[in-house]
Length: 391
Ligand SMILES: *Cc1c(COP(=O)(O)O)cnc(C)c1O
Image (tube, rainbow, N blue to C red; front, side, top):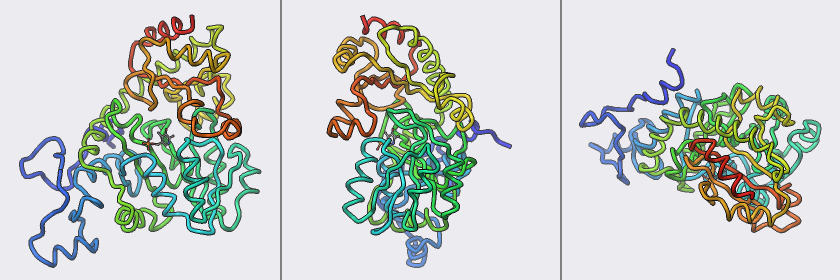
């Protein structure tokens, strides 16, 4: 049996490259030529897997998809041009006017507005509930519910729901459990073993390898027949969000080093979370890898021993947060997660800035919270920078 990390490095080409290139070439082409009308028709009608047009298929992207497929054990993987494209294409495939989506108010900002504004305009009803309360979830689902949608660790609240409990409810209703697993890489845990039917990843984050590019993955475990077929034969054609070959090339290389980078970043985050607790100016350290975190046990059970590389800290006030961010010397002031560099952001005034005070309060996005994405630096240099910025 070949282990995960070996699979991440070695993936078979679908067909041999003309020059025996050892890396997957970047096929920068819009179209593909055929020898005769029959072959052309077979490709366009899906009777062969010969590529026809790069809006729907491209050898470099397929190679990347196959790498993810072999690492996750999925039945199909579709690479698209952002995490948001993965989410929107998935929801547009499972929802329809008159249907509703059961989810939480604790969502990535754009996912929240996709569900509560964009899809709502097309007659899809958002049904927000507390996904950590299974009774509430049961009460919220009705005959028109088309899926349960969640993030495995919400950002920035850091809430963790019980995937197996939610899978049980969704499968009783014969609807898919869709999980955005961006915050813990799929090399660490198998979401399908916990009952997830469709996994979504913003490959911009851990996977891209040092924040090289924007990308997203739709990982289908095949529980609902024709889901990925619908994505490929309807969504990619009609919405046009397929990944581009150059991005697939960069993210393939990123995927090869994902596990190595993640181990260091998660270890740095664990050390830092522990150290930050003894600093008086920091009122609270939120990291699900801390033993007294309310989600520690569930997180260990679901995701294994690591707890990701995102930490939030709370300071006294919004002003203290701004001062802290302004004084950082090493840590970069930027959004994004899991770059090689450590990044700091004040979510309430940036990512959640366009929302009203009332909406932010409702989403539990506090004015006192700083989000840190921990990188590959020496952890004690990060600690020194945080300490000097708090002075
Ligand atoms: C970043 C992120 C997204 C969106 O991904 P993009 O690649 O920026 O479109 C979705 N979900 C989560 C949890 C994220 O962190």
